[in-house]
Amino acid sequence: MTTLILILTFAIVAVLVASAAVTFCFYACWYYEARNFPEAAQLPNEPVELSFVDKATGMILEWLALALLIISYPLRLVHDASPVFTRKQGETPVILVHGYGGASANFLWMQRRLKNRGWHNVYAVSYTPPTINARKLAQQVVDHVDRILAATGAEKAHLVCHSMGGPLTRYALLHLGLAGKVDKVITLGSPHQGTRLANLFMARGAAAQLRYNSPFIQELNAEDHTPGGATFYSIYSNMDDFILPVSAAVLGGNARNIHVPRLGHISLLYSPTVQAEVEKCLLEDASSEECAA
View 1: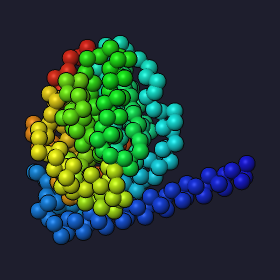
View 2 (view 1 turned 30 degrees about the vertical axis):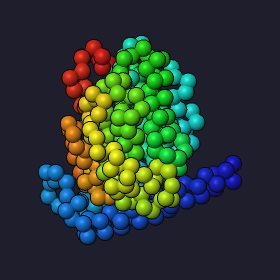
View 3 (view 1 turned 180 degrees about the vertical axis):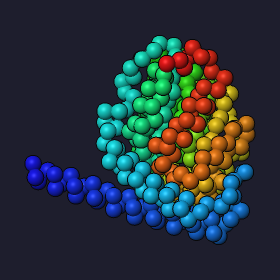
């Protein structure tokens, strides 16, 4: 028992140290970006400049959020939406789509909150591996949506997409037959213009395609930014350390852009403020019967 406790303690400490190092490095990139490309880092209607306390608090919260994400990652084995269980026949499902290198377990907190707040059909899905072409990953998103719609008997789904999940969903709506099957798309810190941080990853598969203004991103943005007849919302933050410049998370077209300041990229998944904004988007123009508790 003592040995097990020591192993667990070492593992937790290792995760905390590693996540602290990653967070520091990414925020160093964030600071460099903001300092050297201030126009690109400027957000629409951004409030007053972040104070030292704002920045320090945001970094600490991001560090803890990343550590929690890593620790909870193995839970995807019991969290994936396969097989799909119907909870309320006919109710529009809410499908949670993770980002690069993530998994369904990234949405444990959000999924539980939505269920507790009255949504019955809430599913988190996984797609792998991130090293393959983004177009193939987008097809996996389509397959998940089709399977969940068939199981629930609903005509359309709502998609909540973190990070890379946003561009994948947009591509699927444009090119892979997802159009007409989605009612609302809510993106959280999605690199709609790509991100310079992707240059730090292997130049293969989706990572290369998500580089700032890459050919894939240019192809995506050359057409309708909000395709498929869906209503789009983009929730983003001025302290997102993964999306560089931070303005790359702003979505064009008919999207409603929602700024939630002082939050890091992973913190978006756990923030009560973001949770509340997601609920507002889901409830907008929805019938009271559909989302009643």
